[in-house]
Length: 311
Image 1 (cartoon, rainbow, N blue to C red):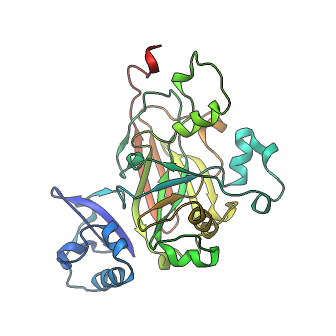
Image 2: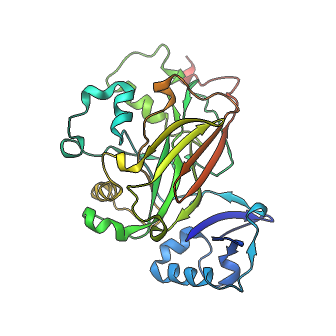
């Protein structure tokens, strides 16, 4: 199933995307979960009931053109990213010397937390944060957790996945507040991490696609275009760590709960490596096979950038 969260005539709802349009789930199931997150939290019986609704021809469908799509999970309990999970991306950002010949065997995943205020809707304008003049794009396959997962093995991870969506891990590549700062160890790391936290810097969507429609998550084509020009193009088979290994690893660091979103890393072609950082007003389109297309535009930079502590 393709599941969408949306606004129609001022009403926030969610539904099943069909050839006829979006079948509104709360309208067909008035006493059921009120949101897609609540449906995931309700577990397999709720998902099975929703599947029955999708198969019922009598259910009214709203034309897709008449709704405004939102992120499938607009406020996930947790939002995680994964640093350098494609070898070619690792090499393009001058970290090739740090990458062993067999990284999957000799290294471990590098997850990091992001605030849920970073989530943005499909079609939304991405705000240009006031602490960086250099903004970049990163297309990523995102996995949505469907069951509580704590210290699970990779072999058990598939049963904990509710579905998949697209993430664009927008990144601030420099920090204006570094000017005049005394150098300390790990400054570069924290500047990089802060560059993942800005409001609206993680568009998600357009749909949550259930695992039965995805099949093998390690064989999905993905590409990112800026104003129609292909900037990133790869396949999820090139991940260093698979989706199941990532879910397992994260579950040993923290308890994963239904609705958590994990972005699984980006392939090569980012702007910091190619010299093509994003410009104001550009349109970024992310496509992943079997999921769809996520498109956003970048807003203009602010008139004034942030200077901390009254420098």
